[in-house]
Image (cartoon, rainbow, N blue to C red; front, side, top):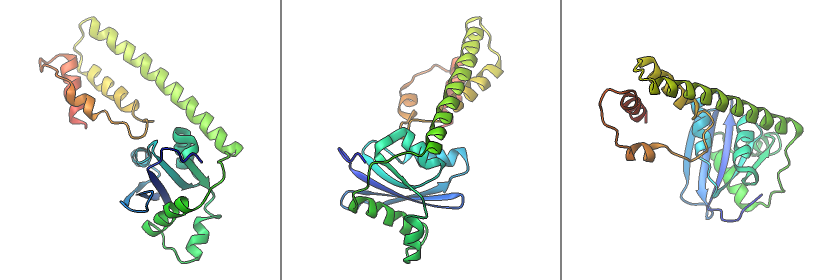
Length: 207
C-alpha cells in the first residue's frame, strides 16, 4: 500500500445496500462520517467522491471497492468481510460508524501487505473500462450531431435536452473529488434565448 504524501485514512463498513465511511487524519482525529446507498448510481458516485489521492482506504470486497481501486490503485486495500469485518463484529464492534471507524484505525496501525487483485476483480475492471469507452464513444457521436445542428442554425428545444443527457452521462464515472461547479460559476453567458444560453441555464441550475 502506497502511504507517501498521505493525509487521511478511510475505513468503510457495508451492510446490505448501505455504506458508512469514516475519514480521519493520520493522528486519528478530525473524524467525519458519510453514508449512503451502494445500489444506486448517485450513491456510488457520492461514495467514490469521498476518496482522494492524499488518502488511504480499507474496504470490504465488493464492486465499489474494485471501482475505488481502479481509480486510486495502491492507496486502496480490499479484504473479504469474513477476514476482518465479521471478526470485528464478533468481538463486539457494532455496525455502521463504529465499524467504519475501527477499519480506519486498523489501517493506521497495521502494515498491510501489497494489494493483489483476484482474477475476478481484474475482469471487473476490464469490463468497467470497456463500458466507459463505449459510453465516451456514444457521448462523442451524439455531441457531434448536436453541434452540427447548432452550426446549421437549429434552435430545437430537444437539442438542449439531448445535450443535458450527454452532460449527465459524462458524470456517470466521474474522477473522484473533481467538481465542475467552479468552472460553471466562471462562465458568463448572455441570456439571449439561443441554444447555448438555454443549455448553460439548465446546466447551472442542476448544480
